[in-house]
Each structure stands twice: as structure tokens, then as C-alpha cells.
Amino acid sequence: MWVFMRRRLEVLQELWCSDCCDDGPGPAGLDGSAWPAPAVPVVPIAYVPVPQKSVGLAILLTILFGPLGMLYSTVPGALVMLVVSVLLAFATAGISLFLTWPICVIWGAIAAQSYNTGRR
Picture 1 (cartoon, rainbow, N blue to C red):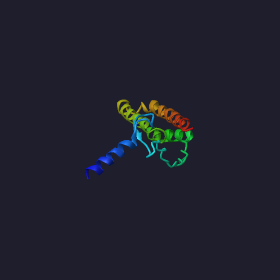
Picture 2 (cartoon, helix red, strand yellow):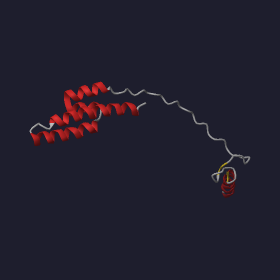
Picture 3 (cartoon, one colour):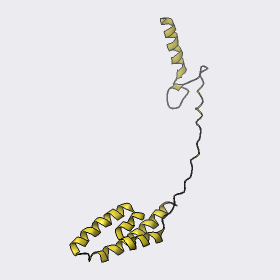
Picture 4 (tube, helix red, strand yellow):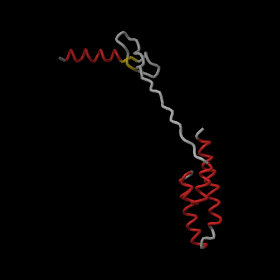
């Protein structure tokens, strides 16, 4: 049994050569030639078009709903403006909405346009 195991180890050492690959020792065929690279199936990647966001709709939603309308074009921006608008509205008895509402409209339009240019 030991003779069989020793011969098997010798065969395995012969199969593992150091001169058949550029990156060091690697497997080789019984005749000493390098094994061919395995065939890997190429799977085509499906192209799924991403719909663009309408700048006009972003403007309309922010005019009607302010920071909540910004959720269409930018979620992080909407959350920031919602917190800022609520805090300033409480501090100024609602007068600050005349400043924060137009900022929301401009920010929403720029965010929708930026989203569209990033998707081309």
C-alpha cells in the first residue's frame, strides 16, 4: 500500500510543474504541456434603460408640496430641506417658508437635471 501511495505522490508532483506558467507553479498535462484555459461561458448583459426624471414635474411637485415634492428628484435633499424648513418655520412663525420654498423648487429642478445628465 505504501508503494502505491508513494507512486501516486510522485505522479502528482510531476503534474505540478514550475515552468509551464508565467505566474509560478501550476497544473500541467501528463505530457508536461500546460493545460488550456477553461472555457467560461459568456453571458450577455441585458441593457435595461433607466427612465429619466422630468424637470417640469420636479418643478411642479416642489411648487405644490415644497420639500415633500423634492422626494421625486432627490431624497437626501428633500430630507435636509424638510428639517430646515420645519425648524425655520417654527422659529420665524412661518415667514421663512417664503425663502425655503423657492430654494426647494430650484434644488429640485437642478437635482432632476443632474440625475438625467448622469444617466446618459
